Amino acid sequence: MIIAGVAALAIGQGQALRLEVPDEPGLETVAVAWEGRSIPFANDSAGWFTFVGVDLDASPGVYSAELTWTYRDGRVRRSGKRIEVAERQFRTTHLEVAPKYVELSADNEARTARERSEINEIYARITPEALWTEPFAVPIPGTTGGRNFGHRRVFNDQPRAPHSGADLTAATGTEIRATNRGRVVLAKELFFSGNAVFVDHGLGIYSVYLHLSEIRVEPGEIIDKGQVLGLAGATGRVTGPHLHWGVRAQGARVDPFSLLLE
Ligand SMILES: [Zn+2]
Image (tube, rainbow, N blue to C red; front, side, top):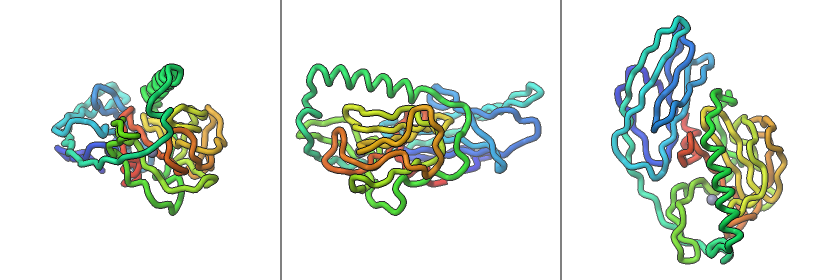
């Protein structure tokens, strides 16, 4: 969405919003201040673009975003935009999983705390360039499912965090492909997520692929859009084989399908 000249933008909870501004002679950088962070824009032949994320639990209401254009001659221009965040209704899902994933042992409690802080450190980093050049794509071409983002979840009768991704139907062994080009920043087994791959696409956008039976990439590796990064499986806290595909935009939990709507 080109936002120059647009006073107000609307978005739902748990969605990523693509922002675009035209290129101008002498323009060096563009950034948007959003939710206390400065998010850079990247540029390509069509102009400047970025995504901002609205967390699925963000309060509905009117938010402000300030854009800053910085020119090579030192000039700076600013413009504020209103972004209206609309409330969305999310279903509640009841799931039965192995008891060790609901009543955690002391060891597993400590392990999940360590893993959570490692993951939060990853999401806090905003790589100031876009590593991708093509639109984002579903990691399993032609698959079904994936409409359970944001569902409120009750595991073995106990409420837990809402579902932060999209579960795609996949038999064990199904090839899982990178949603877009990026750098692998984590590729290992995690307690809840099982075998997991995290990819940094730049501009604060991360995609994650969980519950894999096999991992085929290494941390630090640049992978292409569509490259096989692992195979689907049923590792970690699951009720059966599938791919959990998640996207974070500057830490906000967003529906991965909202990245596809360009
Ligand atoms: Zn899931």
